[in-house]
Structures are given as C-alpha cells and as structure tokens.
Length: 481
Image (cartoon, rainbow, N blue to C red; front, side):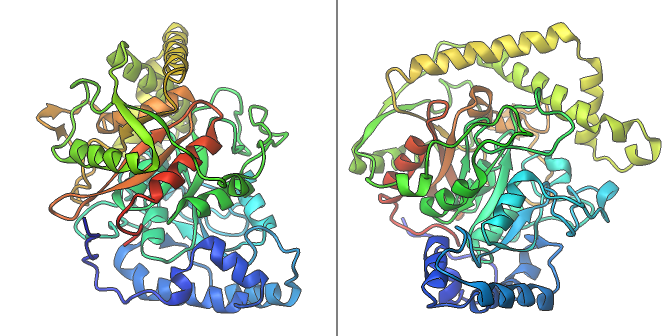
C-alpha cells in the first residue's frame, strides 16, 4: 500500500520541517542548526499551509517569536532542556500564560490566562518556544474539530473531510509538518481519533502519569488525560518525558518510572496481542476498517507479535452506559456554571447543553453504579493481561466523514443515540485507565486514513511505546501527509 497524496495544494515541506523532533533537538544542541533557523522554517511552513486547513490558531506575532528564538540562541549550551528550541503549538484546551485560550467557545473567545497548565509550564521549562495554539471543538466535546470562534479544521488529506477531534488541530499540524511534535488530550478518544484520521501517532498515557491542572476539582475527574502526539513514536516519548511525573497539586499523579525515550531501546522482542475487533458484532463498524486493522496485525507478525481473536465475556452495553454517566458527571457538571447563566447558555453548542442537562438528572446511586461497572471492567482487563501483552482495537468505527457533518447519525446501518456513541470503541482504554497508542494502519480506496489502538496494562506505558516502535518498523509508508 502506498500513502496517498494530500488533496491540499501545498508545497513540499523543507528539509528542516521534515526532521523529527529528536533530530531537531540534536541538531540545535550540536549547533548544526540555530533556533532561529528551525523556528523560521516552521513559521514559513505555517504561512504556506495553515490558511488551507485552519489547524493552528492564535498564532503569536512572528517578530515576537523570532526574538524569543534569538534569545535562545544566545543562551544555547550543551545543557539545554529536552525540547530546547522546538516550536510548539499547545492544544487550545490548555491554559497558556499571556496567550489567548478559547477552549473553542465564544464564552472564552478573548480569554488570556495568567498561568500555564502544569504540563505547559513543563514544556516551557524544557526550552520549547510556544508559537500559538491548535484548534479544538467547543470544550473538547466530540471528535470533530469545529467551533464558532475559529471555524473547522480540515483533514490533512482531504479538505472535504473532518480532521477528527478533539486534538484535530494538533493532528493536522503534525501531518502537514507545521510543528515537529504536539500535545493532545483524551477523554473519549481525543488523542487517538484525530491521529488515526491524519496518519500520525497519538498516545493516551495511563491515568495519572501526566498531571492535569490546575483545576477546581482534582479527585473525581480521572478519565481525561494529557499526552503526546508525533510523526513517530520516539518524538512522542521525547515529549512524554517532559509532560510526565508527579505534581503536588495533582494528588492522583505519580512519578514517572524513568526516561521513556531512553527506554525505547532495546526494541521489543514480540508478544501476544488480543484482537477484539468489533466485539463479536457489538460495535457497528464501517466496512473496510476491520480489514485494514487485520492486515496491519498480519504485518505485526514481522516483529514477532502474534495475534489471537478474543471476545471478552462482558456486558459492553452496560459498560458504555457507565462511560456516559461518568462523563456527564464530570463534563456536564463542569459546564453547568455556563448553563446557569442565560447569556452564556445561549453560546453553548447543543452537545454541551445535552451533557449538562443529563448531568442534572443523575443521582448518587447512578454514579456509584457506573463506578462499580468501571471497576469490574478494570478487573476484566487485568485478567486479559495475564494472557496477553496487548489489546488491539480499531481506533474509530468510521472513516473521516464530511466536515459539515457534526457527527454521524448512523454507522453500518445502526442509529447513533448520542454525539459520541460512534466513538464507543475508544471508551475501553479510558475506563480501564490504560495506556493506548494509535498507530496508522492505512487508507481505504478513497484515500481516507485509519488507525488502530494498541492498549497495554495500567502503568505499562513504556511497554506500549516499545511495541509501537516495533509496529512502526513494519509500516510500508511514512506517517503524516
């Protein structure tokens, strides 16, 4: 299989922009490239490409960015930070000091935070130059990146298609070489889905590995996490090394076990993979997706990973309802402050109103029952990982769809009863607190990209990344567009 050409009329990326993040950091450290050269190359790329796809928003003034690059060149030493000199655009759900953070909502269209999110502060401290933000759906709700502040982000391969979401801007910016590496976040597939739909990698870490916040509530909201995205696995490990680790204001966070980048060597030597497919017909899946995943798993045998089909004996409909309940209790309650203000309520999209109104109907016993169901699933996962090293699932149940369609009302002949039901396949790793990586698997006959999830045991992040490196060696085409 060959990688199809992007349908966007964009020039080829420069040699600098095609270098990996790891290669760029090394070139800057060895003074083969200046920070100004690197930053200028990516800003030129953004100028040439971003107007066609709308992936990067709130881009800082070029002169200000270059002054920061020049200052970095002056202080450059062999002891620079892990991301020194890399231009990075932060997902627009994370607060950035002095840089507009809209959350994709008209309510916050002009909001300029006075502090960074914890992981953003770490990215700055590691020497990265924050150049702007990447586009998101309103409050990150839904796997289609559009909002009433900046408009939609278009797929890296086809301007008629959605980029996915909620890290859609990040995925497209990566795929079209506008940034060397990117952050994302994931509650119901928001790191994995857009990575799959733009032929890049996205890693959802174990719950607690990357501290979230600062937040008003730090104990109940456990299912949304921050993580890295990249054009290769090593670049994700580079960023994860910076993002991860305990923070005292994030009490459920924990220390990272060591360097993920250094831990990628030696390569994984094979393992057993449980292929869950469509869960014996439980999940409606657009034709062609399972075939691409199964072909990818066949290639994975070249890296000594053996696959066996598995259909766990579990009530997956009840598990999905538990996910919906816990998401409403988290997201719906968080958005209620806007719903309670009539002026702000009018600015909320229907999916946000749906989350709030359903959250208001929840009872404490319902929330506890959902948590009990989640606990049962966690135990089921642990039993699976006694026999298997990885679980494999499609990353999405549909290929990228028309950008003007907010969400598919039907998948494979089955009606969808909510704006996120069609992404049910992403909930299994979330509910288990498991690390999960999207790896590209190929394209359908229309050139639409797809990916596959490789899911590991809780806190087995390095093992998942090592497996992804092994998988990467079997790909017959490069990531990105």
